[in-house]
Image (cartoon, rainbow, N blue to C red; front, top):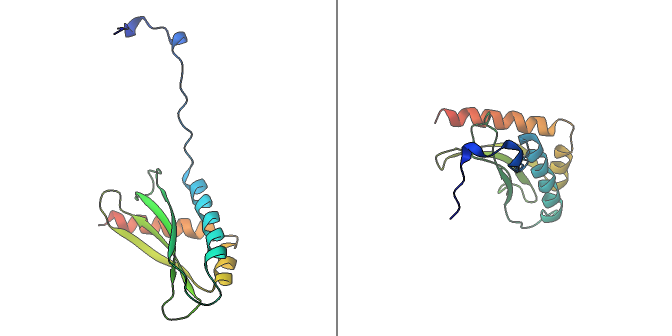
Length: 137
């Protein structure tokens, strides 16, 4: 085994290993939104059965009190062909989540809503509300 004297190692001789670049929260959210749009257009039929699905990511933003954030699609049990678009946040230390509905409608209506100008801002606002509610648990 080789022992090194840390005091004698020169900074010039130490190779700097760059940290893996982590994506910021809005970038991660935009990636999840685009994946969700693709899945909605592909997996939700005009009429008939479809499975619930979700796209999520792990949260590394310290300003948001959540371990993970998820966009979910669930079948509307009352109206055939409609789906619910939900956003949820998972508590950092407990298996408790908070969620809220963003929109309810057909596949085309949901995609139109998601393609709106302020959609990502609305999702960020809802996530901050969910984060605040998780702080009180």
